[in-house]
Amino acid sequence: MPKSAQSAKGSEGSKARQARMVRAAVDIFFAQGYRASMASIAAKAGVAKQTVYAHFHSKERLFEAVVRSLAGSIVLTLTESDVALRPSLISFALALRDRVLSPRAIGVYRTLVAEAPRFPKLAKLIYASGQEAAQHALADFLAKHMRDGSLRKSDPQFAAQMFMNMAYGHERARLLYGVSVSKSGDQRRVEQIVDCFLSAFAVEGSEITHTQHIHTRRNRGEAHA
Image (cartoon, rainbow, N blue to C red; front, side, top):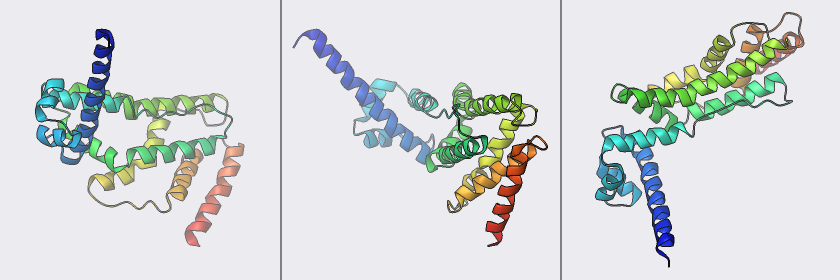
């Protein structure tokens, strides 16, 4: 085999091994926090501790690699389509809750908040590529509907912040304190959140206002059934 081919094969093997170590570090860091040992990460990855140090040199560098890998995978966006406003917001809220309220996401949040003073740039990176990116995407989406008259004109950034906090704020607070959250009735809760939000930003006399009255009565009927 030519030396160039051997070098390429070795490089691919090295990258795969490094990716495996990062995946193992994600699991260990967010289960045990930053206090996790390099030995436990190496064991999870199926490599020697010296191999982890050979690739990352220190626990700080490995943690940085973990955060950067997550920053590239958590962006959540709203895509333009012919789907009506209410179903679009319901789908976005459900996807947001799945992402933010998962056991791993709660572990990530706890660990990053605890280590933010030690890694301020990384904390800002994960915030910018996650929650802030999703908020800006939602604000752009809402701004479009404010311009075309589907929603009452207001500050789209404020509206996006309000919607996102309504979508998961209560449940995330419970989970951060170790209080369980039931997934049953998740769809109906999201529909109620979306209807409440749309009522707040509805243009008086619009189709949304009429539709929201119908959905609100329906949700109240289901709640009392």
